[in-house]
Image (cartoon, rainbow, N blue to C red; front, side):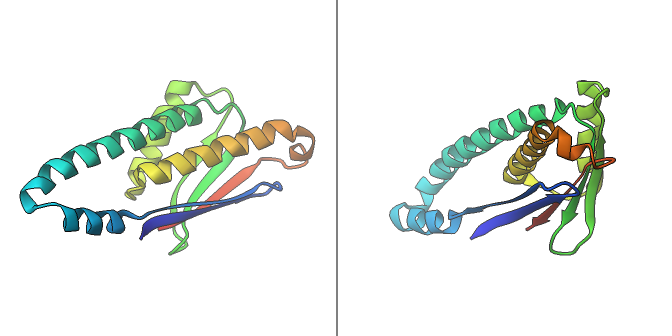
Length: 155
């Protein structure tokens, strides 16, 4: 089973826990039992290209949503297995969308950690849910000087 778990918490009351896994090895065992070695090349190429394009499109859409964040908060992303920081990012409302995009991607790239499409999808979704929480709970959030979102990723 391949997968990860993502746990988020903040200095507000926001918490979230998500995870994803793949039954990939079961698919492969089934596929190997039903096809000849020559057929596998064509099957895998088509199957993997389709899966990658679907996840890639979803990850791109969620990254676009991240770049549109209009609230101010700090984001810390941690490797939940080791406790080491992967990267951090400061979202500010007056930062242009293109600059957020560039700086966010540079932060992820500098980390040297390969996050993958599924992790990026859940990471982006958690960031958007946190921003929605901040907007909907403004009275509670005003008590906090600067909201901080911590996300632990267990690989």
